[in-house]
Image (spheres, rainbow, N blue to C red):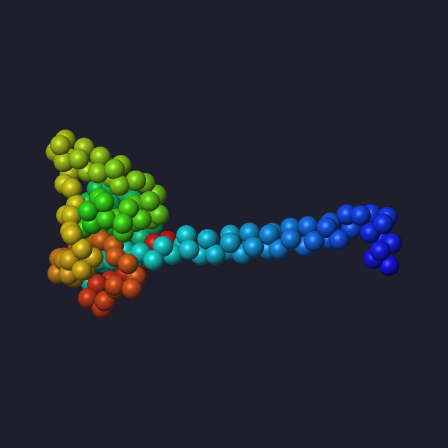
Length: 161
């Protein structure tokens, strides 16, 4: 039977294999979209705050405003102390790009403009995640970020939604 089909349409086996391959590609792309959406919603980065901070979650807009040094107080009126890693630290780069959706040099430019114009302060720059974790745990009203696997019970994790 196949000899007959092959003689009538010599491309018969190839067309079936191409359709099968195309279906497998579509399935792979659909799975890739699902996985990338899950990875996008959780970057492996946790926004952390001092235990005394009176907030459990922040909107992405408010988070950008805090790290852009436009929002300087918590809802209860207490001043926010912002801690960040160095501009070239890989976690800082991921945090600014994936969570804040900007670039480190844009953040740096915003901070410098506020400092030089006298309208604000720059965040406190730390060298390591361990140092950030320690300072946020010890500093009232502090906020920063670390990788999820470095979280301990001395800080509060803020949900971004």
